[in-house]
Length: 520
Image (cartoon, rainbow, N blue to C red; front, side, top):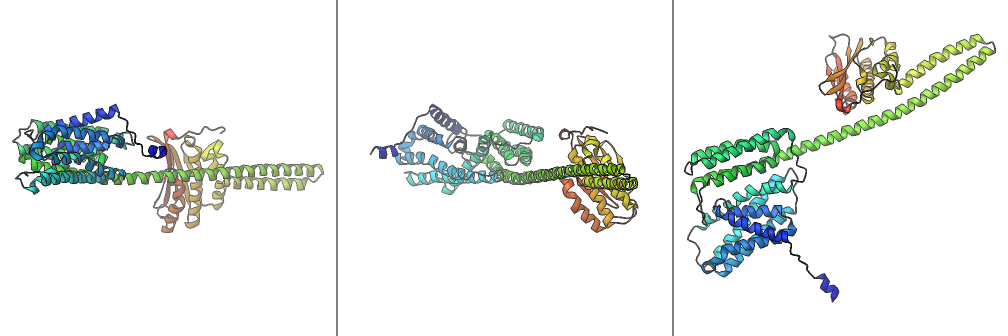
């Protein structure tokens, strides 16, 4: 029995912060009702906004505040409308709003779908809560009002919707203040200017006479321009800020009697237009946020791909470097053994054989080092890109073809890190090989290292010496396919124009660690 009792025991601890929340909510609804109209019912907006901001564990205190608000408002109406109506119409509205908002909160919207999610929440809350209230009223009132039912439904639903769509987006934005804001700092100045313009135009609405509906309508239309600008700059977040700056000044400038069913026909058409504009701003903001999120995701994916490609290239170069070092050690061992053999032959009196062997070993040792430098240019780390190009195996192969002129190398390659020098080294060798394979005629190679703004880099041109001879289509396609992968991984580009291939690799100055030659 004790176990069963403990299983069904409910513990409810009264929290002082909850009681304060209930009191503040009740006071806000009572005060805002004095400034409300049928066409803009502020307590409905406060109810929905509070349910979005307040954690669900504190919702019972909001329910308590709602009951305090209705007790103050409707207990004096018992004699007129009956006890049944006072109880049902006061106790069921907040649970209905809780149900609608709970069902929406069950599916947290993505950044791109937030605007549509807010529209759905506003429509559903504005439809079901006043619909329930009117249904209970017309069912239980002993003497229903003589006004047209459809007219009452229209005013109630529109009034609730106008207030909800004004406050709910701002409340939801406030609830996400600790999340990733995605604000772009470069837009701070134009954002501040747009908000300031809307505040000035809102002040103009307050100073305009209550009968000057045309002037007020013009001010509203002008205020819509910075509102659209905010939406374009920040998506649904900009719309969430712009909508209250549009609707609240117009509502404050609308004359009110302070009594129930207060209504101003002169501004009703303008408020209807503002409601449509609010829907359009949220829908537009949702679309902009969607495309911005897609572009951001695509940019992150491209950045990740480039980073992985660079890492793969660097790993491959490290493996080739280790292989080249092993080949160098093997070459040194072979040279040492041959030197010992030459010395022994000379000591035995075989000078002709020794000299012949020494000459052959020198030639083959040089060829072996040239081929090893093609595996990995170890000298590049000490003497730089230009010396590695002019003294390595690549230049020997170019010279043997008698088709590659002496390279023109300008600038200081030591401003670039080893990775960038390796990239242009590999790409240059492949570009020259491509032209030697697919094109006829003499080839020239030109490079220039330097800085431009906040970037350091190198530009290399591999071209046919005959300027009147353009590269073939096959050469162009293969150049783009074979050279772009390595170049683009380091933020560079390959351009094929007329008779030449242009290769550019660069990096920001802050990310480049200039190479200091250890020997030159």
